[in-house]
Image (spheres, rainbow, N blue to C red):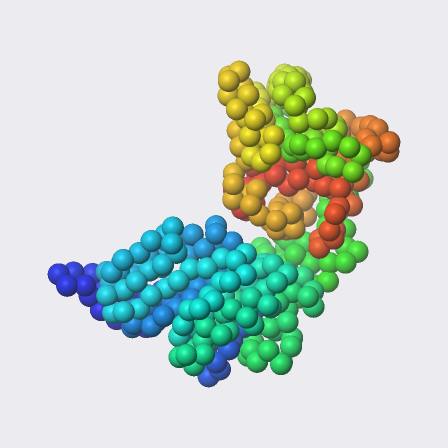
Length: 430
């Protein structure tokens, strides 16, 4: 599907992504409404980009819909690059690309209930729709679907599942025939461009339920399933003695601004990481306190002192890296305070903080499943009183976490998942 529409004076061709056999099969489906349920890295977004670029270059109007701005921004950049030779005008801020052939692509986020309203589209493309809000079906019926009436337009929704949830719009598209969507389902390994060696590792290195949902694209029932198993973080059923001379020690801080027994606490977890010998990551210590926002500035220096103590105790080769702090609420103030005092405080990558709690847990689950994250004796044995309850709150929160359950106590869980992504993966947790 490559062609050479050119702008006057330009010799640059439009080159669309080449479709692999599975993508081509979806493209050839003779259905007005299609839903693509495929594993991660199968190429769902690339397929949608090809369809959007092809349509806009041929003078058609396309609506591109994503759950949030970050997903939209990445797609905008890539489509803009593809269409550059035929772009007449474009605005990332306004979310629009217009071509010299009269085509256009409007980019919408699905946190806007009026997304697509009063527009006319030949095609509506919905990316990662499983992660849209609870009002997604209403947005589809009242705003997006009516935008297809004038041209008799079509729609394609693509995503990896997000649990076995009948209230989820993507689940409904795949399971409710009355919505009129024809389904295409394929696991990750059917993408022929992925290295065979990587495909072979997926099932071995991921927890079974994670593998089933993320790579086989099945609707997984997470109810009652303990996500982070304690035995995976122990060695022969016991906590570990941290490796001497790890690469570094660092802390992760999750802050709260309110006080009162019903509100979140301020949590910190301390990690040691070692790339070349011993345990890759060990949880050295943790703490959970309930303090007013204006007192956190007096509390945070203690976190840095504890990091230095642990770095000295275990003779970390690069010492303490300081604290990574969630850049929200009072976290911003704490980061600024650290900078003023010359302390190594930094914000956690916004890509990571923007991801939902469930998504963060899934993204780091492979490290825990492969037993690359361990608990020290100190972290395992530690017991404190918090909100009138005396126990090991770290184990209670991390090992008690359940996917899809709302209102869980999760301050320490957040520091745990952030810390694994920072210490062992990139900002996406891989």
